[in-house]
Image (cartoon, rainbow, N blue to C red; front, side):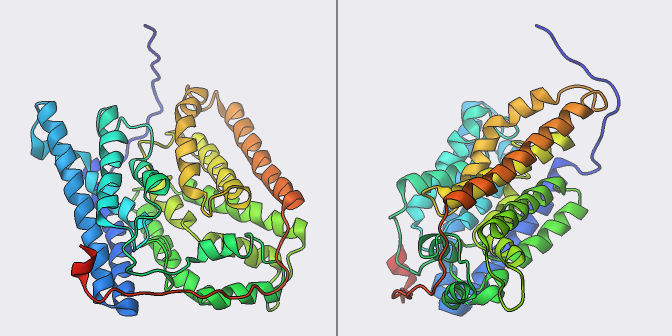
Length: 384
């Protein structure tokens, strides 16, 4: 067997894994608590308690899976649980789900996230796919109809994808959409029903800045991921002739609308930055983020799913070993190859804009508002 060994330069982080996971857990819980407060205030305390119930179910499932894994491996249960950081996966998974998901669905999704997405590969640090994304994909595929009817309403992503085909081209069409979701302010602040933690755009960005300053995540991944989405949709707005909104050019408000609708900010800050499933080299991370952004927009605009962030993460996880292999070696020697790969990914991203602009038909007039049902179950026991 041939071994490849590289000497200096080597970079060493001042943060331990425990410190990194502690700061990440704090950041996630800040967003989760904000979500609980919002749902409790807007729809009643029982709705806020539903989020807590879902998190408790996910955490218990995680600890049970890891305890069984420890017994099978004849390791200390305490050591496995405290050093695998499964609770991070549980928090991310719950925050990716809508409030009306049932507890049994989150339990099964957590089992797949932990047992299949992580432990099957050998545990923490050995998994190929982002475990939380694996669990969310299970819910998408098998439990889309498993709801408690606790809070039932159309999400901003569903409305924009279904009624407006992701392309409200005129001020009238945009006003029609914003009237149904509460305006740009509601989308920025997260005061509209959606996934439990994905809609708090400003708060997630602030937490992301905190995590970057703490050295928990690499700034390159969220910056190039969100920046590429902005550039792709900006080009799309220019190519399709999206009209201004109250004096704001279409090539500005339309990309912003893409960023604050759905889970791209949450995915860019908390999921793509997973150090286990993302490339290790700086150039590899940039290439990884740009390609993920292109796939996200392509799925959104041309796929059958309203949200493309989840599957773009899983798809790019498949290519992480190839990216690592392509950029293996002394960084100064592979500099030209790295720049070539990044340039190719940028061209791919622009191709998405040209392809979408040539095949999409935007909505130019107001869309008739259909009846939305916002139902609040009066008693938590009915959920259980």
